Amino acid sequence: MNADTSPPNPTPGPLRGEVAIPLTEALAMAQSLQRDGFLGEAESVYRQIVARKPNQPEALHFLGVLLSQTGRRDEGVELILAALELKPNYVDAFSNLGHVLQELGHLEEAEEAYRHAIKLDPDFADAHLNLSALLYECGKYEESLKHSQRAMEIAPMQSQAHVIAGEAFAKEGRHAEAAEAYMRAMERNLFHAGVHEKMGISLLRMGRTAEAIDIYQRWISLDPDNPRPHHHLAACTGIGVPARASNEYIREVFNRFAATFDERLTALQYSAPALVVESVGAELGEPQAQYAVLDAGCGTGLCGAGIRPFAKRLTGVDLSSKMLAKAEERKLYDELIESELTEYLLRSPQSFDVIISADTLIYFGELRSVMTAAAAALRPQGRFVFTLEKVESADAPDGFRLESHGRYAHSMEYIRNVIEQAGLKPGEITEIFVRTERREPVKGLLAVGRKP
Ligand SMILES: C[S@@+](CC[C@H](N)C(=O)[O-])C[C@H]1O[C@@H](n2cnc3c(N)ncnc32)[C@H](O)[C@@H]1O
Image (cartoon, rainbow, N blue to C red; front, side, top):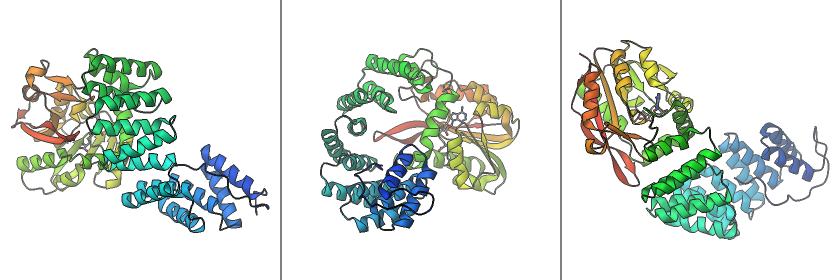
């Protein structure tokens, strides 16, 4: 979003109240406060300007942007529209209007606003960039590329357009071009968030493992305390593969992912929650709110609605506070606990009739510890129902493998052994499609362990 636009119309005269300075200076001051993150102070100055001069389009626009930044998007849109009434050729306002509408999920209107900004000023790089990001989110990769490339021509030193282009190329399976685009982004901004990870994954898709290793090592040297490159490097080299993804890695990945998780997973036709709930029904019959249920690695609570009818009491546990905050919004859980899963299970002997875990044990390689802890946390006749990603035993002599994307895959034989060794009786382990990835279905496994 761009709050730093063309200079406002000079309008001399002091403001009422606290800010007794000329209006242009007040506006510049508010913008500077807004840029530096002093949003409360900036809002107060904008409001004084608007009180003094209600028809000042820049103040209305910037105040609208600020309200949107602070979660008051509907009000923000109204103010930006008011600014546009007063100044119909206000290009920045159209671009920012598109951004807020996009955040509100009004994608068609957002696209229209960006396109209008581009019509008014075909060389407005921000509008091309915003439009390319929107089209990418809508899965229109070819069209997205047109606008990211135009943004690059206009503002070649801006790294974001190169990243969006890289992502669109990657979605189209054009990994060499994706890697080139990410490289250009890195040349412009070495610290661009996520670019090393995306680059590494594109290189691995082309089998260029040595280059991916080099990228992850460079990322480690830039950001040594970040758990993500260490995890990916282990996946690439097979050296130092952890028994499960570290708590730091999980928090880092899912705290960032929480805001868009549901939307993204829906787009990927994510089916694990429905399959887990269906399996609980097949195991235990009609739901009558009769069980103490644990949703292990509950995330944003996508299993909540399906499993709630079975639950007398529904508990969710997860490492990511931001995922848990999303789960809380659903108002389906009696209790949500921020904890590492195995540790929580060990603290909860004989506490649950049903434990479900959708798409969470894929962050565990070695499953013995968590399975033993789950078995101990189940009451007699209890069920542990969970999903995993599948690898053939021939490709994973240890029974599991850390894949280049950072998740673990397990073999059917390993899962069956682990269930038995934990003192549970394995039910049938079935092949499922968990979700799509790059338009291909991801093969998974649905398993049940029954406590005698
Ligand atoms: C892919 S999400 C799945 C969430 C949810 N079960 C669903 O189906 O939408 C995986 C979740 O597992 C959590 N997780 C991964 N490892 C964990 C661990 N060791 N302890 C607790 N939570 C963990 C993550 O924080 C994340 O919310």
